[in-house]
Image (cartoon, rainbow, N blue to C red; front, side, top):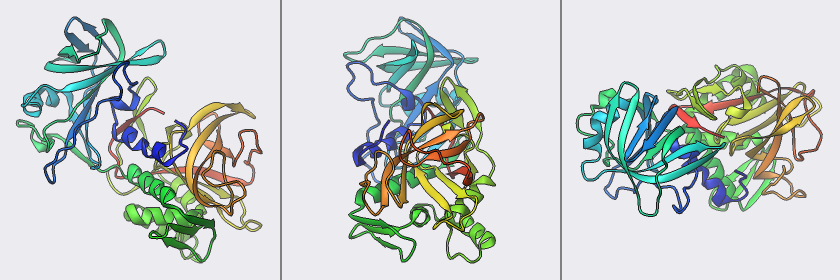
Length: 413
Protein backbone atom coordinates (compact mmCIF):
# COMPACT_ATOMS: atom_id res chain seq x y z
CA UNK A 1 0.00 0.00 0.00
CA UNK A 2 1.39 3.40 -0.95
CA UNK A 3 0.25 5.90 1.69
CA UNK A 4 -0.13 9.38 0.23
CA UNK A 5 -2.81 11.09 2.30
CA UNK A 6 -4.22 11.16 5.80
CA UNK A 7 -7.22 8.98 5.04
CA UNK A 8 -5.08 6.29 3.43
CA UNK A 9 -2.57 6.32 6.25
CA UNK A 10 -5.37 6.09 8.76
CA UNK A 11 -6.60 2.95 7.01
CA UNK A 12 -3.64 0.95 8.25
CA UNK A 13 -5.26 1.01 11.70
CA UNK A 14 -7.71 -1.68 10.63
CA UNK A 15 -5.02 -3.74 8.94
CA UNK A 16 -2.94 -3.84 12.11
CA UNK A 17 -5.81 -4.49 14.47
CA UNK A 18 -6.99 -7.40 12.35
CA UNK A 19 -4.06 -9.60 13.29
CA UNK A 20 -5.31 -12.74 11.67
CA UNK A 21 -7.41 -13.51 8.61
CA UNK A 22 -8.40 -9.98 7.66
CA UNK A 23 -4.76 -8.96 7.40
CA UNK A 24 -4.57 -10.93 4.16
CA UNK A 25 -8.20 -11.15 3.09
CA UNK A 26 -9.01 -10.02 -0.41
CA UNK A 27 -12.40 -8.29 -0.75
CA UNK A 28 -14.74 -10.95 -2.10
CA UNK A 29 -16.44 -10.23 -5.39
CA UNK A 30 -19.84 -8.69 -4.74
CA UNK A 31 -19.07 -8.16 -1.08
CA UNK A 32 -18.23 -4.48 -1.18
CA UNK A 33 -16.13 -4.26 1.98
CA UNK A 34 -14.72 -6.89 4.33
CA UNK A 35 -17.03 -7.47 7.31
CA UNK A 36 -16.30 -5.82 10.64
CA UNK A 37 -17.75 -6.17 14.09
CA UNK A 38 -20.44 -3.76 15.16
CA UNK A 39 -19.55 -1.45 17.99
CA UNK A 40 -21.49 -2.17 21.15
CA UNK A 41 -23.42 0.85 22.39
CA UNK A 42 -23.21 -0.02 26.06
CA UNK A 43 -20.68 1.91 28.12
CA UNK A 44 -17.36 0.18 28.86
CA UNK A 45 -18.22 -2.81 26.66
CA UNK A 46 -15.96 -4.21 23.98
CA UNK A 47 -16.83 -6.36 20.98
CA UNK A 48 -14.30 -8.94 19.83
CA UNK A 49 -13.44 -10.67 16.57
CA UNK A 50 -11.67 -14.02 16.12
CA UNK A 51 -9.11 -15.16 13.56
CA UNK A 52 -8.70 -18.86 12.75
CA UNK A 53 -6.23 -20.27 10.20
CA UNK A 54 -4.97 -23.58 8.87
CA UNK A 55 -2.33 -24.98 6.55
CA UNK A 56 -4.99 -26.64 4.40
CA UNK A 57 -8.71 -27.16 4.24
CA UNK A 58 -11.67 -28.11 2.10
CA UNK A 59 -15.29 -27.20 1.52
CA UNK A 60 -17.61 -29.95 0.36
CA UNK A 61 -21.31 -29.28 0.41
CA UNK A 62 -22.06 -27.55 3.70
CA UNK A 63 -18.97 -28.85 5.54
CA UNK A 64 -15.95 -26.60 5.93
CA UNK A 65 -12.84 -28.40 7.19
CA UNK A 66 -9.57 -26.88 8.43
CA UNK A 67 -6.85 -29.53 8.72
CA UNK A 68 -4.37 -29.18 10.23
CA UNK A 69 -5.81 -26.16 12.01
CA UNK A 70 -3.40 -23.85 13.85
CA UNK A 71 -3.80 -24.53 17.54
CA UNK A 72 -4.01 -20.89 18.68
CA UNK A 73 -6.58 -18.27 17.70
CA UNK A 74 -6.34 -14.56 18.34
CA UNK A 75 -9.24 -12.58 19.69
CA UNK A 76 -8.92 -8.84 19.12
CA UNK A 77 -11.15 -5.94 19.98
CA UNK A 78 -13.10 -3.75 17.65
CA UNK A 79 -11.67 -0.25 17.43
CA UNK A 80 -11.20 2.15 19.11
CA UNK A 81 -10.21 -0.29 21.91
CA UNK A 82 -6.74 -1.83 21.38
CA UNK A 83 -6.74 -5.23 23.09
CA UNK A 84 -5.92 -8.78 22.10
CA UNK A 85 -5.55 -12.18 23.68
CA UNK A 86 -4.80 -15.76 22.72
CA UNK A 87 -7.18 -18.68 23.06
CA UNK A 88 -6.75 -22.24 21.88
CA UNK A 89 -9.00 -23.72 19.21
CA UNK A 90 -10.47 -26.22 21.67
CA UNK A 91 -11.36 -23.33 24.01
CA UNK A 92 -13.08 -21.57 21.12
CA UNK A 93 -15.14 -24.65 20.31
CA UNK A 94 -16.05 -25.19 23.97
CA UNK A 95 -17.14 -21.56 24.32
CA UNK A 96 -18.99 -21.32 20.99
CA UNK A 97 -22.54 -21.50 22.33
CA UNK A 98 -21.77 -18.86 24.93
CA UNK A 99 -20.09 -16.55 22.45
CA UNK A 100 -22.90 -16.73 19.93
CA UNK A 101 -25.94 -17.38 22.11
CA UNK A 102 -28.12 -14.88 20.23
CA UNK A 103 -27.32 -16.04 16.67
CA UNK A 104 -24.67 -17.87 14.69
CA UNK A 105 -21.85 -15.63 13.47
CA UNK A 106 -20.99 -14.42 10.00
CA UNK A 107 -17.42 -14.82 8.82
CA UNK A 108 -15.10 -13.98 5.96
CA UNK A 109 -13.38 -17.02 4.45
CA UNK A 110 -10.21 -16.47 2.42
CA UNK A 111 -7.90 -18.88 0.63
CA UNK A 112 -5.05 -18.91 -1.90
CA UNK A 113 -5.62 -19.42 -5.63
CA UNK A 114 -2.83 -19.24 -8.24
CA UNK A 115 -0.67 -16.95 -6.12
CA UNK A 116 -3.56 -14.63 -5.25
CA UNK A 117 -6.40 -14.64 -2.76
CA UNK A 118 -10.11 -15.29 -3.07
CA UNK A 119 -12.80 -14.88 -0.48
CA UNK A 120 -16.46 -15.22 0.33
CA UNK A 121 -18.81 -14.34 3.19
CA UNK A 122 -20.50 -17.15 5.08
CA UNK A 123 -22.51 -18.09 8.16
CA UNK A 124 -20.81 -20.55 10.55
CA UNK A 125 -22.33 -23.06 12.96
CA UNK A 126 -21.71 -26.38 14.70
CA UNK A 127 -17.92 -26.38 15.20
CA UNK A 128 -16.39 -29.79 15.95
CA UNK A 129 -12.71 -30.35 16.76
CA UNK A 130 -11.22 -33.83 16.27
CA UNK A 131 -7.46 -33.90 16.80
CA UNK A 132 -6.11 -31.14 14.58
CA UNK A 133 -9.15 -31.09 12.29
CA UNK A 134 -11.77 -28.38 12.80
CA UNK A 135 -15.12 -28.63 11.01
CA UNK A 136 -18.00 -26.16 10.63
CA UNK A 137 -21.41 -26.21 8.99
CA UNK A 138 -21.56 -23.27 6.60
CA UNK A 139 -23.94 -21.48 4.28
CA UNK A 140 -23.30 -18.60 1.90
CA UNK A 141 -24.57 -15.14 2.72
CA UNK A 142 -26.86 -13.53 0.11
CA UNK A 143 -25.01 -12.81 -3.10
CA UNK A 144 -22.08 -15.04 -2.17
CA UNK A 145 -20.87 -18.32 -3.67
CA UNK A 146 -19.27 -21.21 -1.80
CA UNK A 147 -16.11 -22.77 -3.27
CA UNK A 148 -15.89 -26.53 -3.70
CA UNK A 149 -12.92 -28.77 -3.02
CA UNK A 150 -9.53 -28.16 -1.47
CA UNK A 151 -8.53 -24.79 0.06
CA UNK A 152 -4.92 -23.64 0.33
CA UNK A 153 -3.95 -21.67 3.48
CA UNK A 154 -7.59 -21.01 4.43
CA UNK A 155 -8.42 -18.37 7.04
CA UNK A 156 -11.54 -17.20 8.83
CA UNK A 157 -12.37 -13.85 10.36
CA UNK A 158 -15.37 -14.43 12.62
CA UNK A 159 -17.56 -11.48 13.59
CA UNK A 160 -18.22 -10.04 17.05
CA UNK A 161 -18.56 -12.16 20.15
CA UNK A 162 -20.39 -11.28 23.36
CA UNK A 163 -19.78 -7.63 24.14
CA UNK A 164 -17.46 -8.26 27.06
CA UNK A 165 -15.52 -10.90 25.14
CA UNK A 166 -16.11 -13.54 27.80
CA UNK A 167 -18.34 -16.51 27.11
CA UNK A 168 -19.95 -18.76 29.69
CA UNK A 169 -17.70 -21.76 30.29
CA UNK A 170 -14.52 -19.95 29.21
CA UNK A 171 -12.76 -18.92 32.38
CA UNK A 172 -10.59 -15.85 32.14
CA UNK A 173 -7.67 -17.85 33.51
CA UNK A 174 -7.57 -19.94 30.33
CA UNK A 175 -6.79 -16.97 28.13
CA UNK A 176 -3.56 -15.05 27.84
CA UNK A 177 -4.15 -11.36 28.38
CA UNK A 178 -1.68 -9.64 26.10
CA UNK A 179 -2.44 -5.94 26.43
CA UNK A 180 -2.54 -3.12 23.94
CA UNK A 181 -0.89 -2.68 20.57
CA UNK A 182 1.85 -0.22 21.49
CA UNK A 183 3.16 -0.15 17.92
CA UNK A 184 -0.27 0.92 16.71
CA UNK A 185 -0.51 3.68 19.31
CA UNK A 186 2.85 5.07 18.14
CA UNK A 187 1.80 4.99 14.50
CA UNK A 188 -1.59 6.56 15.24
CA UNK A 189 -0.04 9.44 17.17
CA UNK A 190 2.59 10.16 14.51
CA UNK A 191 -0.07 10.06 11.80
CA UNK A 192 -2.32 12.39 13.80
CA UNK A 193 0.50 14.91 14.11
CA UNK A 194 1.14 14.88 10.34
CA UNK A 195 -2.55 15.48 9.68
CA UNK A 196 -2.67 18.24 12.30
CA UNK A 197 0.40 20.08 10.96
CA UNK A 198 -0.22 23.64 9.78
CA UNK A 199 3.30 25.01 10.23
CA UNK A 200 6.55 23.10 10.48
CA UNK A 201 10.29 23.38 9.98
CA UNK A 202 13.37 21.36 10.87
CA UNK A 203 15.25 22.81 13.83
CA UNK A 204 17.38 21.50 16.69
CA UNK A 205 16.62 24.33 19.12
CA UNK A 206 14.38 25.79 20.30
CA UNK A 207 11.69 23.23 19.48
CA UNK A 208 7.98 24.05 19.51
CA UNK A 209 5.00 21.70 19.73
CA UNK A 210 1.73 23.65 19.64
CA UNK A 211 -1.23 21.30 19.20
CA UNK A 212 -3.82 24.07 19.07
CA UNK A 213 -2.17 25.90 16.19
CA UNK A 214 -0.70 22.81 14.55
CA UNK A 215 2.87 24.09 14.85
CA UNK A 216 5.70 21.53 15.03
CA UNK A 217 9.24 22.95 14.89
CA UNK A 218 11.67 20.16 15.71
CA UNK A 219 14.36 17.78 14.54
CA UNK A 220 13.97 14.06 13.91
CA UNK A 221 14.66 12.84 17.45
CA UNK A 222 12.60 15.69 18.87
CA UNK A 223 9.56 14.41 16.98
CA UNK A 224 10.09 10.78 18.06
CA UNK A 225 10.73 11.88 21.67
CA UNK A 226 7.47 13.86 21.52
CA UNK A 227 5.40 11.01 20.05
CA UNK A 228 6.71 8.47 22.56
CA UNK A 229 6.29 10.92 25.42
CA UNK A 230 2.60 11.27 24.59
CA UNK A 231 1.62 7.64 24.03
CA UNK A 232 4.54 5.46 25.17
CA UNK A 233 6.36 7.29 27.97
CA UNK A 234 7.42 4.03 29.60
CA UNK A 235 9.08 3.00 26.32
CA UNK A 236 10.86 6.35 26.08
CA UNK A 237 12.26 6.02 29.61
CA UNK A 238 14.95 3.38 28.85
CA UNK A 239 16.10 5.32 25.79
CA UNK A 240 16.49 8.38 28.02
CA UNK A 241 18.47 6.29 30.50
CA UNK A 242 20.76 5.10 27.71
CA UNK A 243 21.29 8.66 26.45
CA UNK A 244 22.20 9.88 29.92
CA UNK A 245 24.71 7.06 30.31
CA UNK A 246 26.25 7.04 26.83
CA UNK A 247 26.09 10.77 26.06
CA UNK A 248 25.74 12.63 29.37
CA UNK A 249 26.35 15.96 27.66
CA UNK A 250 22.96 15.67 25.93
CA UNK A 251 19.70 16.94 27.36
CA UNK A 252 17.56 14.38 25.55
CA UNK A 253 17.83 11.28 23.31
CA UNK A 254 19.10 11.90 19.78
CA UNK A 255 19.24 9.70 16.70
CA UNK A 256 22.39 7.85 17.72
CA UNK A 257 20.83 7.01 21.10
CA UNK A 258 17.91 5.30 19.37
CA UNK A 259 20.28 3.41 17.08
CA UNK A 260 22.56 2.30 19.91
CA UNK A 261 19.69 1.27 22.16
CA UNK A 262 17.82 -0.71 19.47
CA UNK A 263 21.00 -2.40 18.22
CA UNK A 264 21.61 -3.78 21.73
CA UNK A 265 18.13 -5.33 22.09
CA UNK A 266 17.06 -8.92 21.59
CA UNK A 267 15.74 -9.67 18.11
CA UNK A 268 11.99 -10.24 17.91
CA UNK A 269 11.24 -13.79 16.87
CA UNK A 270 8.99 -15.10 14.14
CA UNK A 271 7.53 -18.15 15.82
CA UNK A 272 5.55 -19.41 12.82
CA UNK A 273 5.19 -18.79 9.08
CA UNK A 274 2.00 -19.41 7.13
CA UNK A 275 2.83 -18.74 3.52
CA UNK A 276 3.91 -15.09 3.44
CA UNK A 277 2.37 -14.42 6.83
CA UNK A 278 4.70 -14.04 9.80
CA UNK A 279 3.50 -14.73 13.34
CA UNK A 280 5.63 -12.63 15.70
CA UNK A 281 6.20 -13.33 19.37
CA UNK A 282 4.49 -11.12 21.91
CA UNK A 283 6.32 -8.31 23.67
CA UNK A 284 4.74 -8.66 27.11
CA UNK A 285 5.67 -5.35 28.70
CA UNK A 286 6.92 -1.84 27.98
CA UNK A 287 10.26 -2.93 26.57
CA UNK A 288 11.76 -2.92 23.07
CA UNK A 289 12.80 -5.66 20.67
CA UNK A 290 15.11 -5.20 17.74
CA UNK A 291 13.56 -5.99 14.35
CA UNK A 292 16.61 -7.46 12.65
CA UNK A 293 15.16 -7.91 9.15
CA UNK A 294 13.69 -4.96 7.28
CA UNK A 295 10.95 -7.11 5.76
CA UNK A 296 9.71 -7.85 9.31
CA UNK A 297 9.04 -4.15 10.00
CA UNK A 298 5.53 -2.79 10.38
CA UNK A 299 3.77 0.54 11.09
CA UNK A 300 4.77 2.01 14.45
CA UNK A 301 8.26 0.51 14.45
CA UNK A 302 11.05 3.07 14.90
CA UNK A 303 14.07 2.99 12.57
CA UNK A 304 17.32 4.86 13.20
CA UNK A 305 20.78 5.15 11.72
CA UNK A 306 23.98 6.57 13.17
CA UNK A 307 26.82 8.34 11.39
CA UNK A 308 30.27 6.83 11.96
CA UNK A 309 31.46 10.35 12.82
CA UNK A 310 29.21 13.31 13.45
CA UNK A 311 32.07 15.80 13.81
CA UNK A 312 31.48 17.23 10.34
CA UNK A 313 27.68 16.80 10.40
CA UNK A 314 24.90 18.84 12.02
CA UNK A 315 23.30 15.72 13.50
CA UNK A 316 24.16 12.27 14.85
CA UNK A 317 22.08 10.34 12.33
CA UNK A 318 18.35 10.13 11.69
CA UNK A 319 15.36 8.49 13.40
CA UNK A 320 11.92 7.88 11.89
CA UNK A 321 8.61 6.07 12.49
CA UNK A 322 7.68 3.45 9.91
CA UNK A 323 4.26 4.15 8.39
CA UNK A 324 3.66 1.01 6.32
CA UNK A 325 5.25 -2.32 5.40
CA UNK A 326 8.47 -2.12 3.39
CA UNK A 327 7.87 -2.93 -0.28
CA UNK A 328 10.51 -5.02 -2.01
CA UNK A 329 11.51 -3.53 -5.36
CA UNK A 330 14.50 -5.43 -6.73
CA UNK A 331 18.27 -5.40 -6.37
CA UNK A 332 20.98 -2.77 -6.59
CA UNK A 333 24.72 -3.09 -6.03
CA UNK A 334 24.25 -6.64 -4.79
CA UNK A 335 21.69 -5.59 -2.17
CA UNK A 336 17.89 -5.90 -2.02
CA UNK A 337 16.06 -2.58 -2.37
CA UNK A 338 12.90 -1.63 -0.47
CA UNK A 339 10.56 1.33 -0.50
CA UNK A 340 9.69 2.31 3.10
CA UNK A 341 6.94 4.85 3.94
CA UNK A 342 7.98 6.96 6.93
CA UNK A 343 6.86 9.74 9.26
CA UNK A 344 9.69 11.99 10.43
CA UNK A 345 10.97 15.50 10.89
CA UNK A 346 13.58 15.94 8.17
CA UNK A 347 15.79 18.68 6.85
CA UNK A 348 14.48 18.01 3.33
CA UNK A 349 11.70 16.04 1.68
CA UNK A 350 11.80 12.35 0.74
CA UNK A 351 10.08 10.79 -2.26
CA UNK A 352 6.25 11.06 -2.53
CA UNK A 353 6.34 13.49 0.37
CA UNK A 354 3.78 15.73 2.05
CA UNK A 355 6.57 18.35 2.25
CA UNK A 356 7.51 20.22 -0.89
CA UNK A 357 11.06 19.71 -2.15
CA UNK A 358 11.84 23.43 -1.71
CA UNK A 359 10.48 23.59 1.86
CA UNK A 360 12.49 24.12 5.03
CA UNK A 361 11.71 20.56 6.06
CA UNK A 362 10.00 19.63 9.29
CA UNK A 363 7.28 17.09 10.04
CA UNK A 364 5.79 15.06 7.22
CA UNK A 365 5.19 11.74 5.53
CA UNK A 366 7.36 10.45 2.71
CA UNK A 367 9.19 7.45 1.33
CA UNK A 368 12.86 6.47 1.62
CA UNK A 369 14.61 3.56 -0.03
CA UNK A 370 16.59 1.11 2.09
CA UNK A 371 18.91 -1.65 0.94
CA UNK A 372 19.49 -4.89 2.82
CA UNK A 373 22.32 -7.42 2.93
CA UNK A 374 21.98 -11.16 2.30
CA UNK A 375 20.55 -11.63 5.82
CA UNK A 376 17.80 -9.05 5.27
CA UNK A 377 19.36 -6.44 7.54
CA UNK A 378 19.20 -2.79 6.37
CA UNK A 379 22.71 -1.52 5.63
CA UNK A 380 22.24 1.48 3.31
CA UNK A 381 19.64 4.02 2.21
CA UNK A 382 18.60 6.46 -0.50
CA UNK A 383 17.09 9.62 0.91
CA UNK A 384 14.78 10.70 -1.88
CA UNK A 385 15.18 8.92 -5.21
CA UNK A 386 14.93 5.29 -6.24
CA UNK A 387 17.91 5.86 -8.55
CA UNK A 388 19.74 8.31 -6.30
CA UNK A 389 22.99 8.04 -4.39
CA UNK A 390 23.30 5.06 -2.06
CA UNK A 391 24.54 6.09 1.40
CA UNK A 392 26.38 3.25 3.13
CA UNK A 393 30.00 3.85 4.13
CA UNK A 394 29.34 7.00 6.25
CA UNK A 395 26.89 5.19 8.56
CA UNK A 396 27.80 2.94 11.46
CA UNK A 397 24.57 1.02 11.12
CA UNK A 398 20.78 0.97 10.89
CA UNK A 399 18.55 -0.52 13.59
CA UNK A 400 14.79 -0.97 13.99
CA UNK A 401 12.96 -1.08 17.34
CA UNK A 402 9.49 -2.42 18.14
CA UNK A 403 7.81 -1.25 21.33
CA UNK A 404 5.81 -3.41 23.70
CA UNK A 405 3.42 -4.34 25.00
CA UNK A 406 2.33 -5.96 21.75
CA UNK A 407 0.41 -9.24 21.42
CA UNK A 408 1.57 -12.06 19.20
CA UNK A 409 0.42 -10.94 15.79
CA UNK A 410 0.13 -12.16 12.26
CA UNK A 411 1.40 -9.77 9.64
CA UNK A 412 1.65 -10.00 5.88
CA UNK A 413 3.41 -7.15 4.08
